[in-house]
Image (cartoon, rainbow, N blue to C red):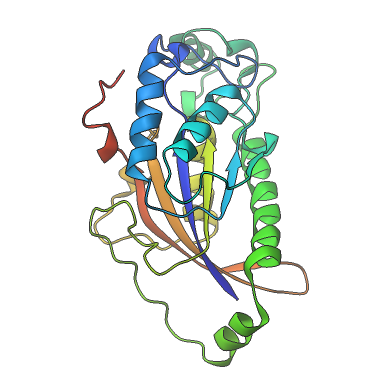
Length: 262
């Protein structure tokens, strides 16, 4: 068995974010000046954490954010950054490059809620979830191959016990204090929202006391940070998460001193 921390960060602001235009996968824009400041703030907030693995969408707004975060980190500046197209934003088809209001109008015309509507040429929510599930499978396999020692496995399986609840004190290392293996993901707003819903609804992720569901599924702000603690076990069919604990979702304390585009 292996327990590791998973920190998920949305990329910093782009000009398209500021102008409320959809980017999806076809619009590959860099960070704005504010987005750069947000990424620096996130990097400074996370600077004392050691990320053993880093996975990033291969769209430049995510890559730039990850580079800035790692550049400000005291322990992970040389950690290999793996670019994975599975972590790309949801594809919005014909709505890409258009105002978000345009997507709402298309959804209304189709008689659907905007969050459930798939524009022509876009990805359905189910397709995005399938991408995340494929990423999780490869992530679990990699984490076990790189970090699961025989000693740890035997010790974990010989004396099963109720996992300790993560300590949540409003600090950057919440939940990760005694977890030496820590993966960082830098991705996108719609993708993260679908991913969190899969972890909570489908994989029965445990939520911290007092966290309301409308907070869990709320949009992630630029450089918003979420963290999960995942325990894996080996099965004949492949790695399986035996427990997933949410520590926090969409934290943005680091943005207090950065002018928010919202």
